[in-house]
Image 1 (cartoon, rainbow, N blue to C red):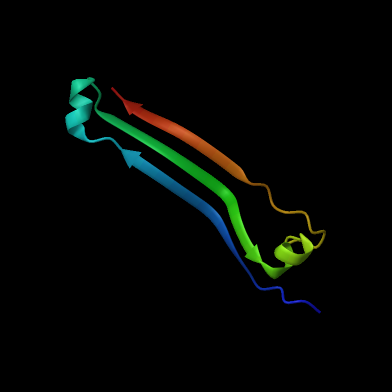
Image 2: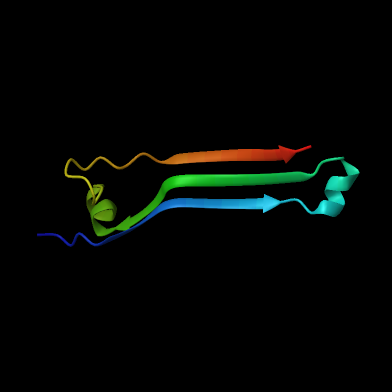
Length: 74
């Protein structure tokens, strides 16, 4: 028997919208830059000591996905 407690961050997104004073100089209405991630972190004794994913029986970790993007409005 092993402790199966864990904490997982499923989704996270960080974004920044450029201020309007800067956008007027380059003739844009809106510019947003963002980064998001799916399953970026898992804290668990099973993954630390046994390299196992605590949510799956076979032990394979969930896929991690990282995306970046830029939204422009003219």
